[in-house]
Image (cartoon, rainbow, N blue to C red):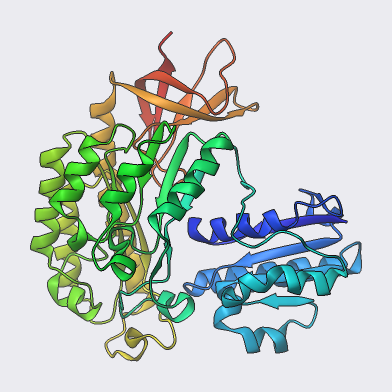
Length: 431
C-alpha cells in the first residue's frame, strides 16, 4: 500500500511525525511523495494559533477530496486533534482515524485495526528522518510548566515531561549512526529541561554528554530568558560542538505587558541575560520572537518594544500578531487590539529589524564561515547553505553560493561572504 505523510507545525511536531513514520517501516507499505498517488495518507496537525488551525482544517479538507480517486485510508493526528477531538469526529466524517497525542503509545494497535495488518514497531523506539540524513531535531521534553496567558500548549500537551538524560543521549547516538551531523535540541522550554524529573535544571549536564558524540554542530533552541544561568553558558563554552546560538523568545519589551503575559522576569533582566551571553560569546547569534498586539498594548508599550529591539540588535527576529486562543487567560482580557493596528505595528517592527539585519550583513562581508550545503537549485545554478548563524527552520536566512565544481550536499565547507540580499547572504567557497 502506497502511503504519504504530511507534517504541519513546529520542529517538535516533526519529531512526532518521524516517530509515526517509523511505524510504517514494513514491506506492506511503500512511501509515496505524490499524495495523489497514495492509497493511505497520515496528516500530523498543529493547533497552536488560529493560522495553524486554519491550515490543519484546509489540509484535511483538501486531502479528503483524494478519496474520490485512489485514497482509501486517511489518518489525522497531532495538536489539532488533541484539542478538538470531539469536533473532529463530527466535522470530518471522511477521516478514518483520529489519534490524540495522548494515544500515540497505542498507535500500533490502532493502526493494526484500521489496516487489518499487524504493526510490529513500537512508537518512540525509532525514527525515520523526514527531510534529510544530515540534520535532525532532538526533542528532550514534551509539554510545558510555564503558563503564559496567551499560550494553549499546556492545554494541548500538558505539563513538562522531561525525558531522562540517558534516553536523550541514546536517541542522539542513534541519530549519529543514521548520519546526522547537525543536532538541534528542542522543547517548549529547553532551559527548563530536567527540573520536573531531577528537581533542578539539567540542560548543561545533557549538552556535556551530547558533546561527546560525533556531531559537527549542536544547536539549542527555545531558551527561556530567566533560566539562562551562568553555569549553562560556561558549559556551552566548554563544549566543542555546541554552537554560540541563542534562541530566546522574549515576547515583548515592556514590563506591564510581560506581566499580563505571565512571563517571568523583566525587560532589564532580558538585557542583563543578553549582556551576559555576549560576555562569554563575542560571536553569539541571538534570535528572538515577539508578539504584537497583545491585549492592553498601547503605542507607548509598543514603542518600548521597538526601543529594546534597537538597543539589543537581535541577529534574527520573528514576530506574529496576537491570536486569541479560547481557554487561555488572555482570551478573556479586555482592551483587545484591533487587527489593523496589530498589522500596522507588525510592519513597523519588521521594518526596524530589516534595517538591523542589513547593518549586520554589511559587517559580515569579507568574513569566512563554515557552512553546511543543503541543496542545489538547478534553475538558478546555485547552492543553498547555512552557517551556525541559521537554524534549519528557515527563519534566519540562508547563504547563496555558486561554484564551478560540484559541492556535496550535507557536507561542510569554508565560505567567504561577498554580499547580501535582504536577509540572505552571498558567498564563495574558499578552496
